[in-house]
Image (cartoon, rainbow, N blue to C red; front, side, top):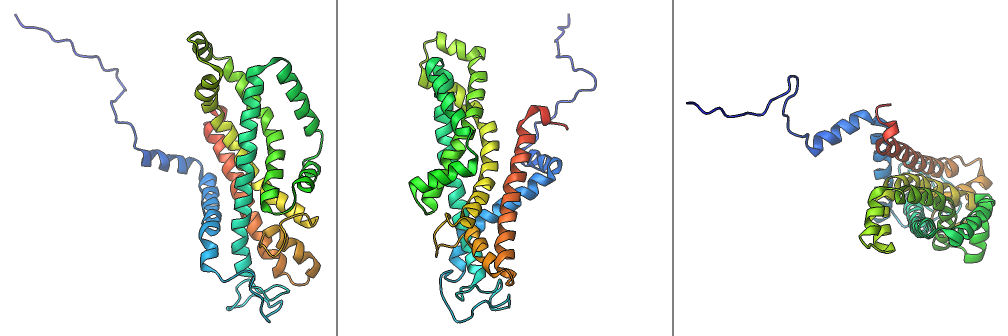
Length: 296
């Protein structure tokens, strides 16, 4: 008598295929989001110039007798009113802008995460008073609040990073608090409480990982906003003090010599490319991480 061996049934139309590799998934994502690939290339270019550009160009603060020369083979972007090579100053300005933007993003992001998560978890009077203070700060226009902080902290890119971090923390706290409240309502958080998990474990083990995508998307856009904010403060003579090269300072200096077109065009183009790259990258990240945007 033969023994019948039961074999698993295979549903017609289905095939057992191996999961695609990471390279194939990356290539598929690149085909779906070509704008995001373009934005990523722009961002990588800006980071590359910020990291290695000042090492290969001349001293951006070296003064010469070649004053206000037009772009040429010797000075690709021309020179400014003190004879300084404008190409070296634009390249070196990338490091200043990126250092300022990343520092402001880290300061604002960490402060917003701490305040938003603790406020949502504590609730009660602490949450009520904290949110009313945030509402009061949000009533000020961002530039006015930034001017106030810069006047208190001082000048320099470090002081500007602190000021921008405070401004960004005020606007980002609301997003973090809302995401924390929605995460705390999940059953696994209640199960962790029943098992005796304390507040630090719940916040950093269960709540914080869910803050990643929305906070990262928002903070990516803030990097471009920090570059524009530095330019705005430079126009008000409250930006980074000379002779440190920065795109905003170069634009502010170029407005007094408007007939010398290269003094405004090249730092303006550099600032536009950087802001465009970060903004487009933030939009692409929103499309990738937001389930409601997939397939649209």
